[in-house]
Image (tube, rainbow, N blue to C red):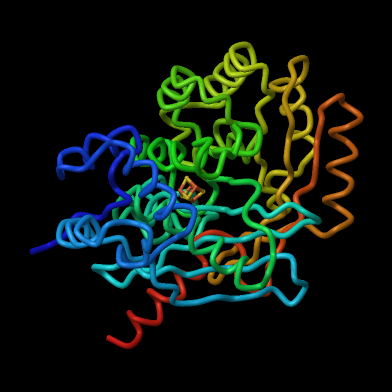
Length: 354
Ligand code: SF4
């Protein structure tokens, strides 16, 4: 019999599930802590619970953790890349741990591959394989916490959904995972320490607003003109820059949280004088931030990242025009830090072998 994955049960259905096994509802709280906080791999580890309950759970559910296929540690000690193996297909889901002072940020994947096809993105080149389940999204987080604990480090403090895939296109499982991360009795990670990135799926941002989670929102802008953005991010043909600016203003008005516009700097393409003028016209005059991300080198691409000098110049020019800007450190280049680069390598290797 194929067992159901326990961590796929929505948190708000856990009590009902435990009661349906003939157990008292207070057991749900206990089991929740064992599964998520103590990160058990087998129900038999719940040593303060009745044996009959442990056996009943084991008969019906699987609670084993994701298998870590690869761990790549940056030589600078500021990033660790994880490749978790999908149970049924062997594909890799990527996650990254970013280490910055006391901050431990988990960059989580939400889909296997991605159907949005941004040309600068390794994940986009894989195409869309499938949505990750709640079990798999939460599983990445648990696996990273296991890694941190094994090094006597403190656990994850911040979460960004900026790994493989478009989290807002896997909305239910994304929400289910958030419920675990934000639950006061489990990890209690507040909305201020969680950010979701979107390529610009405007209706899903509207849906996110209705959830009133007050998490951070980052929109991948990456170009200053619809004509160019159409060629870099096909989703722009459906939701052009004007619609992104409009939803960002609404997000700020409703949540009080300024939206971050992620902007991959591609030398000679997205860091021109024309770009500066257009960005000021779009984003000037309302609270938001532009996060400049130098393009990560990727195999087979004709596109280049900027030099340090040209990146700094572009940043300064934005500040001069009154646009709040930051430069994101491109951590972990030595461990293929950009999303999809590890999984892409695995798949390519397998293709070569077959
Ligand atoms: S950048 Fe994000 S939305 Fe675009 S293809 Fe990559 S994973 Fe998908």
